[in-house]
Image (cartoon, rainbow, N blue to C red; front, side, top):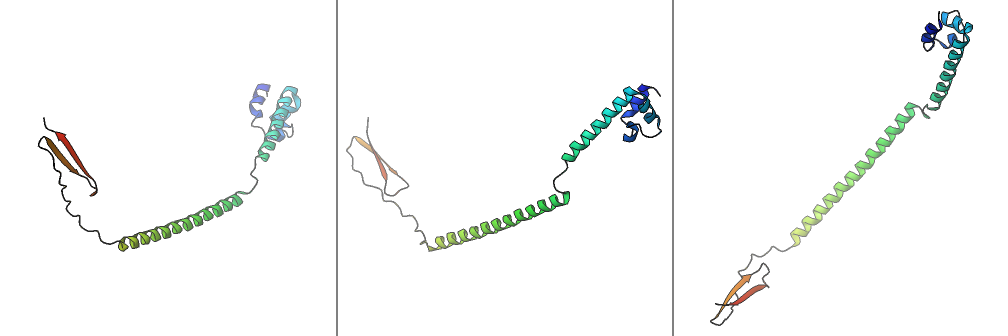
Length: 147
């Protein structure tokens, strides 16, 4: 086989073939060709480096442990929510009860009484306008001259 044909197969070859072990065409060529042997050695070295990097990235805890921890945290959050929700419900009931008891303690409101019109005496050349307000203690009296 030629170097070009072998180089096409190097990335797919087994590590033992890249080391020149065995009787395959790739192994025989790697043993006999210094240039292809150098490429094969680089491939093996890079595979080792990648395996080391992948080993460093493995999770520190098992997946089962992580799932158990997540489930436990979710249960605790649900318990807290239930306690808070029941506390809020109890507070709402208590507030409503206090509000209702306060409403019944007030005397019934008396119907509004008719407001007496104030008596305003003016001279013959004056006009008067009297405005009643919502507050029975306040009345606006407007005096103005006739033209």
